[in-house]
Length: 480
View 1 (cartoon, one colour):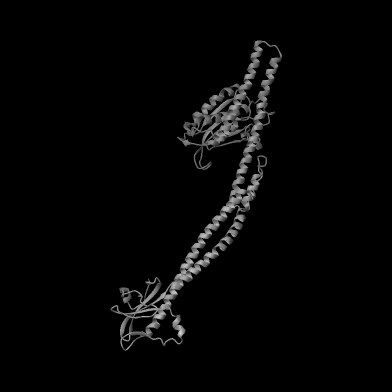
View 2 (cartoon, rainbow, N blue to C red):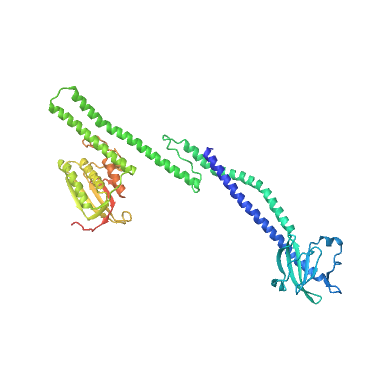
């Protein structure tokens, strides 16, 4: 088990023991207090019984003194076991009787208003000697004279019993805490064992072993959820590393061609003595390759910034119709060189809230792709229309479709055409120039605006690229 797992286990155990100790100490205090109250309640009921006994033993002597019959006890030791404190007062407050155990102490002095009822009155007091006493008072007629009888018992015995119980429980507490610590350590070990296994597995996962996953024993508990999160992280890291490897490989391959071309042209030009015009042609060819290389690097930087989140979108409101016409005007020169016709149909006039330069770049890439792969004197059709909310998502969408008359895209390649550097079999289109980055830029730009880009092959041939984007409708004027 790693050191940090061990530290967590120790902290959990200490927290468990500490909290258990506090709860146990509270239990000991409450149990001792309840025990004391229970003994006091028993003492109160014993005083009630003793009060009834005393009331039957009191009598007046011929000279008027109040006495307590002692012949009630069968054996002498019964009197010695009695801890009763007894005091009898007349209704005007004079002391009529005090037993020898009470002596000169008083069980409350003059009669209080609370002692005037016929019920038993319970109260506690402290004698001059410091003894705590529980006193029971009762008004009772004795031989025709009404007197106030007070019976008291010292609470020291029950206090001692409660203190003894408290001390005994406190002495037992360390053993209970040791047992709790041992049990808590076992429970912590069992609870943290999956976490320890996860730590050991993740320590062995490197950039070359990102395909490994953490086993999930129970997906419903916290550790199982953590394992799922880590597995999801590993999956994303594996995908990112794979994309990085593919990107590095593709970039290396694509950069090799223009660099080799520049080197070849330069070496040929250096090996012979040409006229100035020939050298200008050589330099022009080299600059053409450099321009192609610069454009590819700029595109790669744009994709890298976009995927890293550094590139921010500057949204604005603009007309989709104007955007499409602007993109067509950029590509029209290339289409005219091949005798192609670009036909634009706007079914619905809408405004789009988006980053205009990026959306123009995305649309230009789609139209340029259609021009490149369509034969000479063919038609490229562009359609702008509103898509009903029930068909796509929960809000109104605009769809911009670009249809060409090219060779089409096989079904198994339709998802991959939006990957960087992906190109169909170059032997089929050897005359087409490009590095396979245009559709990747289009895909990113559309998805960054919450849209979807897709491609299909109509029954009559060619390819149909569609961009579906959320819009702010201005009006829906059907073109007739």
